Length: 118
Image (cartoon, rainbow, N blue to C red; front, side, top):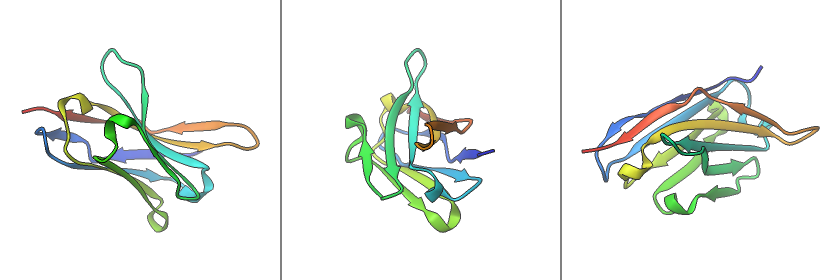
């Protein structure tokens, strides 16, 4: 069974930075895509950023230029570096790992709270 454990969330002031980590129980390269999603109260879960096992990245328009997703293959960890944080970035952030074949399987972490407030 795949386990994903997020860490690094917390309270930060607007304009501040945080780095989220997602530790996987097996090689991150075994997944076709790994990503970060977030869900704010009363809103649907949305994709924030993703990275494929070929190092192709994708970002939501709202975080482009502020967030960076990266991967440390040796540590089986995916990171989300968040800078210039805004109150609207406040949400629970979830790590996702996806395998596409033989069928699509999604794995999720338990989530970590990020609160941007003065």
